[in-house]
Length: 310
Image (cartoon, rainbow, N blue to C red; front, side, top):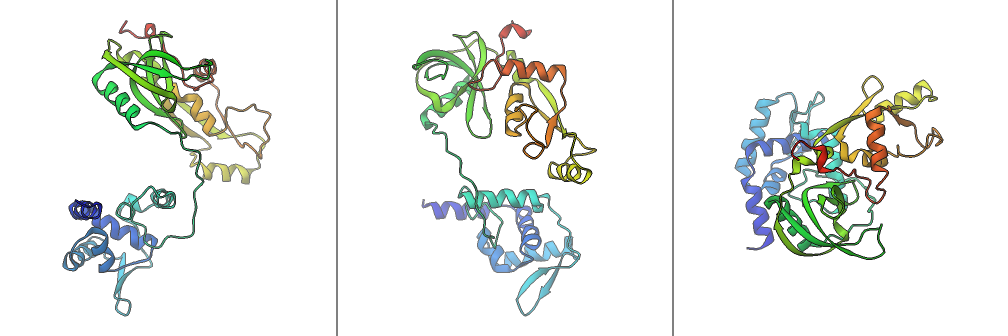
């Protein structure tokens, strides 16, 4: 079956609620919609498209008006989106996917696309066969013998690991795994796994990785020294409530969160460069200190002795 045929059959299976979301989205962001757009996007008949528009009009009669000259529905002045998928976050997410070329026309609801571009960072090359074997090892609770190039060693080394999860720092993916050589849970960059040569049943319990299963709150706030207007701008930028943004993350990922927000840099950075800071707590400082002992990945090691499973 051709790819276009598969796409057509997939869109035909999308239910009526998905089509109502599409109508809502187009009215919100394009300001108009007609039967042809709905029919073409979902591969449905014009009759079905008319029925979907009529159903939407029943649910939100104040959201649209029919323009006879354009043979299209236009968003009414008092339009209020029905679907959460019509908000700015979803729109910009779809726009990013379209600009990056990672979304098909069937997956995106965007009609008119504004001039836009996305910065393309260097892609980490992950071998498909490697990823498959890591996924199967996680699913089947297996140890795998990998050849791994660590930046702490001059050449690649063969080691046994027991992967139990995948993690990303936003730029690269890791396998979170027990290292039999190091005697602790560590992070292994997928692109640095050169080969996987063997597999065996594992006796490592994922629950032993307490820093992976445990969570901590990182509280972000504007730095002192900002003017009231600058502080308000920062609070709006980051969706803060009462001057604080609480980011809940896995304990093993703390340093990555701080790095992404550039909060791992010294406090001597100017307010212009970094207007944010995090609230220091004993627990958070301990996690950061532990992570910095392993600068290659930034993720925390966990010994199995920390778990009641031992």
